[in-house]
Length: 307
Length: 307
Image: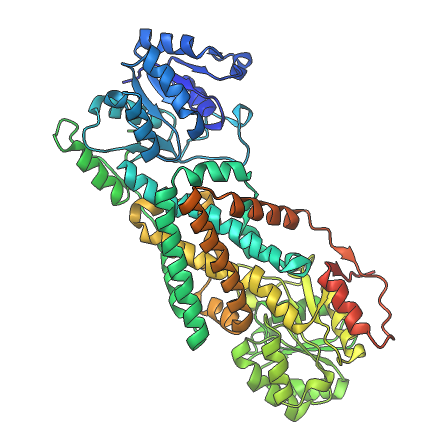
């Protein structure tokens, strides 16, 4: 299962995959526009076609770790040079990538992924072989995907120290809209409403405001790239949010009570704090419904771990 | 200016005031329903009238540090036993306390306050003489307040290690609605919307969700007591929030862009991070408009510090 890995894009995530895959004993090489990692002793260049020719020659797993805006450009090169390689990605939304992969005729050996790791810094300089340790790494589990590619992608995630959460692409997008993209929008709104209160409000702000607005300090173009690429799922999460806020407002106005929102929020946060991630151990990878089995396991909080 | 202090209510805030005032060399004693602090060597009892008789005899500054729900009961005792003492409080909303104080005929020597300090634990056991170090302590600065009481309250705050932010009661309530009460409501809503995403969403949640929902782990009755007592100001902050969220949603739906909310949130968080608190040094406490001077200084980000 330890196939070589060709990493396209060497920012925080791609760089960390290159480092972690190498550290786990795999052949791994990469492409970056600037070839930045070459100086650190990694086999990295700025020649995309050359990296892909080697991938085709060694039957490597190709990992797309470029921003959503660069996906089309890189997929065109993959289709031209290494169309038969196993292919995965690390983009934070999945449905949009599935569609792009299909446009380039590369669906047959594509299984999407999303390592749920981040850091306050970005770029190769911030990358680390340890970035994925203890993190969730979603591997898409839609019907019709190639089971061998699925296992190869999952093994890469495990080798990087992550645990694998299987999910349908659309379910992934709906989930991350709620727990990753919505928090960024709410942090921005809270910061702006606090700022509307002027110097007095900002000078009194402490823990709850600081925590609630922390990710509003993320560069706006990164927030936009992530959120806008998942617009359909984020719109649904925003509708849910506006409905709950409007209910809370109406309850406060008409009866002076915030009981509903306070109790529901407390209960949900408690569920989060007490979440027990079940180990997925009983998947039959030869079964016809293996993807359905994987999805169901992920949907109920399960994850695959390195044995 | 170092008048004795009689602290009524010895939870986290009242207990910390008793400790800090004692540590600064003041005479300080307290009342608590359970008399809990007596064992720690402080002069504390469960006899409210006795504590107030001593306050009247020693012309002490009385500090109300009970929850909003107990304010009326304690004010009735103050009015009966020590109506001529200087009076302040530590309740997290000000307009509602101003009204209660007026109902009990105690407005003449009342100057409200709000130490902006907290901790994840509550109660006497969590109290500390260091709780207010580096924290803002709002002292109400409305027209007609007694200047000598104002200075006594401010001196207590400075002795406790805080810096004093002067603000009109209504301005205080509007500000904390935005930077303290709204963050609790948004944290609860975010937790609930995340929970609506089921086990999959919660199992993928990481930093942005954890930070954004941290204060949703606060006991709901504490969140309600704080937010519901400030309902008018919180309703205005909620309206601003819903309007901004609805604008963001409409922009995402119609043009696929979150530029407005992302840019505004980033700019506001940057203002918060870069806030320079100006020192208030030039107040003339004998001037007729001293409260207006103080309010204006607080409104523009100023604070009094210990010299």
